[in-house]
Amino acid sequence: MTSTERKFTSVEICAGAGGQAVGLHNAMFKHLALIEVDKHACETLRKNITGNVDWHGCQVIEEDLTKFDLEEFKDSLRSKLGLSSDDKFDESLDLLAGGVPCPPFSVAGKQLGQDDERDLFPKMLEMVNVLQPKAVMIENVRGLLDRKFESYRDDIEKELKEMGYEKCFWDVLEAKDFGVPQLRPRAILVAMKERYAKHFRWAKQPDIPIQNVAEALERSMRERFDSVDDLRASAAYDVWHGKASKDVAPTIVGGSKKHGGADLGPTRAKKAWEDLGVCGLGVANDPDKMVDKERDLFAPAGPKLTVRQAALIQGFPESWKFYGRKTAAYRQVGNAFPPPVAQAVGEWVIAALEAGSGESGISPEEEPAFPVSSVLPGADSSDCFSDLEGAIVG
Image 1 (cartoon, rainbow, N blue to C red):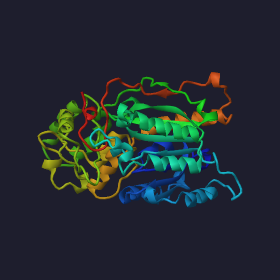
Image 2: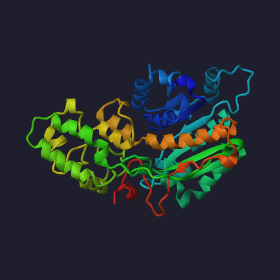
Image 3: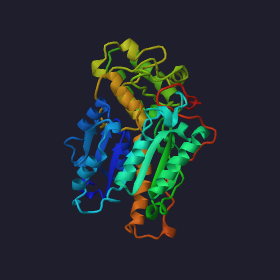
Image 4: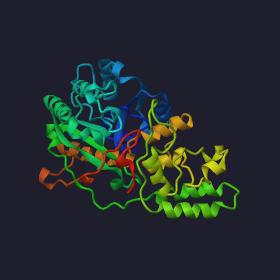
């Protein structure tokens, strides 16, 4: 299906390297704009969508949201939406989405919430108020749902209510329940205008096969071992495959510009990776740039992952490329929202939009219960860049 057949429009803030964007695109949203401040992530977005007819009309905006001119942006959207200066703008945009920064709510940080300068929920709510989309989708770490942030969540829900939105869903989705070979619980908020919200349905996720690390990486790992002229390669691959077949991966952590680097996480995460036959002490160079096969393929703990393989663990399609130096590219992957999860939520939103617009041809009583992940009680919070209980397999 081409972009001209996409009926529902979206704008995304804090787009990163495109995890949520890819998922919503696969759900058949037509992106009008992806807003991101990191230059490396913007380069990734531009090089993947520029010239791609299926992303026609999508603008990558490299800008700090705290300095963003909303009224000017709203005016630019008018032409994209085919509106004149006299046309009402409210509900012309279908979805405003974003993965606002996680450190304010991360269990690894100080959990300052609204007192953290990186908290962009107020900006997101301001954008909701100005743009008045039909639906809002916000992704964050599970820590946001901790009891200590209850009053903060109440304030957010109250503001949305005053703007005409009903909370449809605010809970944790686990990436592995959507075919992503990784532990990655994320808190997802969906709110919609009332006439659409009443059509939003969710239920427990149906049986989707859990994909282990070996299943996700066996082809790319085989290519890496086959690319070296070393008698150990075949046996080393078999050892890796046997271990990697045991389970899904721990949460991939991307780090930030201030914390973390190009490795697979803190001590406990590295141990979990070692149990899966992967060395977590660093990230490997791409095969065509590999200068140290001992380090990248034959470490005692097993091979290191390349950026591309980390992206496969995150649920990105093989066609999506990452730009910037290795550490910058790996951080883009590690901080991303898994596309298959975003796609599932996007499909639920579209179903509600269609029903609310009378386009589905079915009554609310006949609507299907759209699947959602079961939430495991007592599971630990995930995090974007530090040592978490929830990031460990087992």
